[in-house]
Amino acid sequence: MELRLEDSYERCRALHREHGRTYYLATKLLPAWKRPHVHALYGFTRHADDIVDSTATLPVEERARRLEEWSTAFLAGLAGDGVDDPLLPAVLHTIERFDIDRGDFKTFLDSMAMDLTVPSYETYDDLLGYMEGSAAVIGTMMLPILGASDPAAAREPARQLGLAFQLTNFIRDVGEDLERGRVYLPLVDLRRFGVTPADLAEAAKRRTATPAMRELIAFEVQRARAHYALAATGIPLLERSSQSCIRAAYRVYGAILSEVERQDYDVFVARAVVPKAKRLAMAAGSLVTRQGRPVTVPGRPADPGRTPLAAALAALL
Image (cartoon, rainbow, N blue to C red; front, side):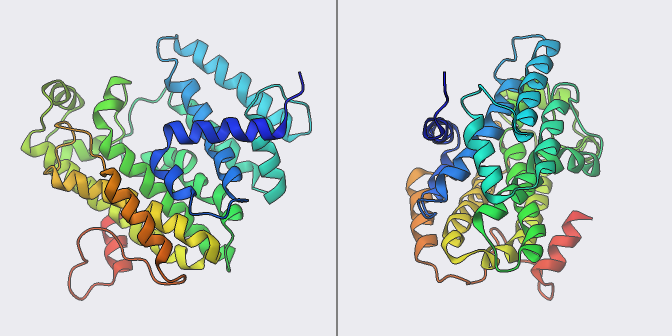
């Protein structure tokens, strides 16, 4: 059966709408012609993630086989072969239209494969190695669609924004990741605050964090905010028609960290969620913000006498 391109784009959009509420809302601020291409990239990343996580009842070997088969079909499609997966026509069309770096997709798929065999990361540098594929390349995949006045200058902020969003997810979803047998907070950080993975699992069962765990999460929140600070310079570099979308996503994802702070850094008592009315208000505010205006870094201000960039770099060391 012939796969219609418009049906493929619609399937990607439906996936985005169902699973990516925050980003889907922000995408509505893009010009209509750009939205399907963002949905296509989301559909690609979501489907790969679902192969790894939504089939958790299957043996690791079976999930690895399915991911390998889908990855092979995708790479064959990049080489010009026909595809029979309903998502891939839209993905391949988007890659071709914007000449997106093919290597980013291979790096992403490699990180998805890591989720099948790597349950934890010793240091933050180790975690960054995983996040290069799971997060940083998402930013660079998106950049050609968003457009930028200086793509070279916008590339690193785009990477940093991907890292900021990913670390925000890791902080919010500690309990959910534990259910999948994974700990995405560096083990060296856990030891620094006297916490073990078993302690986290017990806290998740009790639905309450210990004081040491709250200190750990507070530390990770500041690390995530450092990535947001490094990403902020990139938004004014984007095409004017793309700035409202990314500004809204930046604000709403940053607000998840504010919700974690509001819960006194207890990520087990409830899932940190930005209320819908607040999300809509942030989106509306981003829409009316003057294009090119510098971005306000979410959270607490830097120490007196320190620039946001200096504070961000210090937090990452």
